[in-house]
Length: 141
Image (cartoon, rainbow, N blue to C red; front, side, top):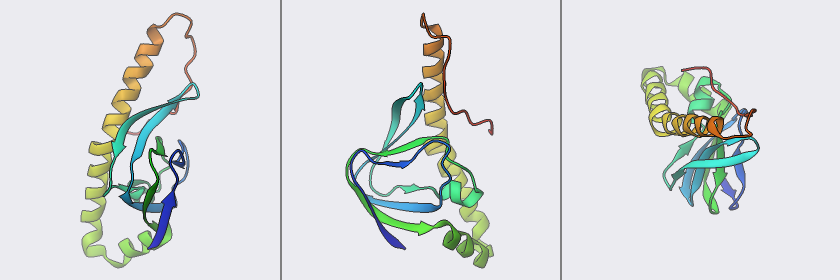
């Protein structure tokens, strides 16, 4: 694992970005949200102890959300290739790890952010003068 630091306001992962590392976040706060019409809307604030990018690295998925530092953060990172080798070398526990990673991502991040995004889009649809909305939408359930 390698040390990782980011300054407040830095974007860790942007929407549609390929993630090549897993971040083990130890200090600071990270906001997770989305961008609509070039405006960022942050939905979740993660404090220390968060693991980011595990779902994306494990399942080779681009991110559909925005991850941004609220404060300076510190932690460690594990490169995607190393992570995949660990999973391959430890087949006995890899299936359990994969299921736990998927469950954590869907319940802690995806469901909450997607729900807020849908609500915000529906709110924009009702506003006068809004006839176009630009957003990233995940078609996979």
